[in-house]
Image (tube, rainbow, N blue to C red; front, side, top):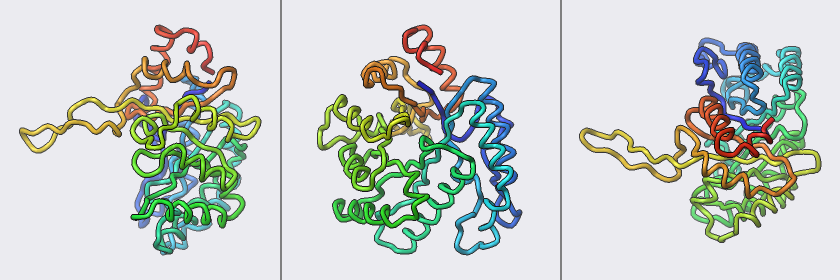
Length: 310
């Protein structure tokens, strides 16, 4: 079992996830890859073997109004191969999560066209990094737009219409308000792709009342032989948030906590299908700091699970 975190490194604040300069400053994938190289060295030092890449790694590469950025992947072929080999040497599983604005269920053609272009860029990025089938682009079904079945059907049709390189990288994730795990399994089955199971989303939105063991078994079965299932885990935020003085805003249970509740994690980990490895992406706001804390907590509270960590 591998534990991972998403994008930002907090344990060493000088590390950047991507070239975040605005377009007039000519940001470039080559700069992002230097940052990624340094992150991989940090992951190796901390014995972390799973990492979610920034969706902005190749800045503006699919922007329809900025064609000067379109050739970055070709320009960085050598650097991509080098960094991808470094990830392989260090045993780091990479992935990308589509942005909230990436939706194939939308009725607006322009938004769908932009979403498809982004998916192609991310797929080519993973391909040129030399990543195997475990390196997926995690995609939500999208908005319901007043008619969830019709929107879901649009998502399926548009996934099928994607270039082969992009479709081959997709993994469908359940969400917390529109499409539950049964919907994700349906869409993924229709397009021949696996499902990424999000535990907090499952707790928040499961109107079809699928039991957790059944959901996990079906998620496991959606992954091809030799590719480990990928899960998202986070604890719900419980802290007050500061609002306009003197008000305090209570949390929503869909919000991610800063750290992982180890007892919740242990309870889920003990229900995963026996004998089948899995990789768990922690979506805690404290990022790598939360991962390192959870690893220490597992050594204390669940040494058998700690022994399964790679």
